[in-house]
Length: 192
Image (cartoon, rainbow, N blue to C red; front, side, top):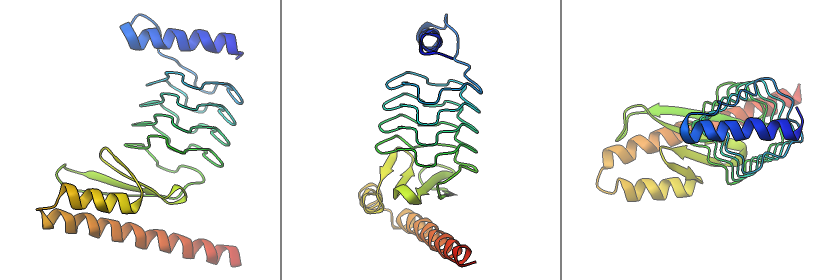
């Protein structure tokens, strides 16, 4: 697919998002490696099995997009909106995810990132707390940030609810223990 054809697909998709008269982008299995998709609005698009290696997706809106089994190796996803995206089985090796919105993502079997997620009841039923180890990013609900920022947020949001604070900290401690275990396991495998 060349850039002109891709631009037509994106234009139809944006029209579909805007008024329902266009066409949802179906780029399943498309070869989009090295393509410039920066700032593209591909919200809800089907990009499963697409080759997006080394693609420029900077500031793209990929919220709720299906990126399952996509090759995102070396892709620039900085400042991209990935909220609610399906990244199951996607290859994110060497992808730039700096400042990307990583909330509510399906991380199942993602390649090259250690993602540890726990679901617990907080003020929301089955709230998910996720830690992306290589990025040192934590997400829960609308929150995304470092561990210290998460702890500050918990202290502020639940200042008068010790029960919820303890519940959050138990989940955090569990995740950190699992992250340490993964690190130990990796070291053992490297020695073999």
